[in-house]
Length: 296
Image (cartoon, rainbow, N blue to C red; front, side, top):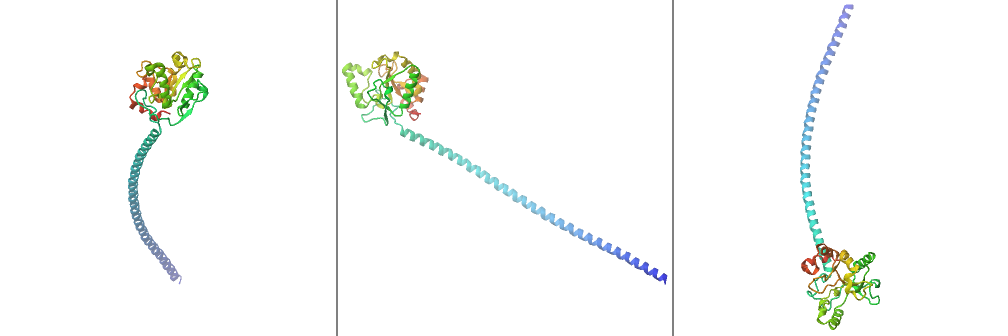
């Protein structure tokens, strides 16, 4: 009986061992199969990922290519816009120049002394009375071109501050006033009046940009103006305020008139001063280039 029980125990133990081994084998086989399936799944997923990555890389490349095309197009458009803006600016600049020229009296820089003629209807676009403190005869009103007034006052003030005080004895004269003055001179000096007085229509005074100057000491006897400190100061400084000596020594128009100063603008006056040139010896076309800046 004991022997029979022992065999049964051994049988059961063996069965358990065999069952355990079988289960182990089964588990191993299942794990291997699962591992293979997992590997297969991983391989499939990796291939899928790689395919998607390749697809994304292609899409990114295409987007970069399209961006490059767009960037180049944008640069090209910007270049066109800059070009057109430059042209527009040039056109605007030209229009502004033309407008400024159109608004500027074209007579102001003409060579009138025995060359060009101002008709009897010409009157400067804007005349203003000169402050009496700058006049020799305080009771006799005189006028000047309104845009010249600032330059004239500035010049007279600075001259006075430098000890070279001067006063205005004559300024704007109309066509009729010049005719009357010339007639008086002819009665007194005969044909000799042509040496120092212009006929009506040829006088710079009709432009409203010209003054005859004297000093308090000389008064109406301003023919000796050349010997004064005022004339010396004007010779060195008048150009800074846009004024020139119209009839210097040895000019071919009138006798030397050290008292007669004409406003032509700072730019032209400076050019004449620096190059030691004479207004009436310049070609009119060269003079005209300064018209746009006459009041700058």
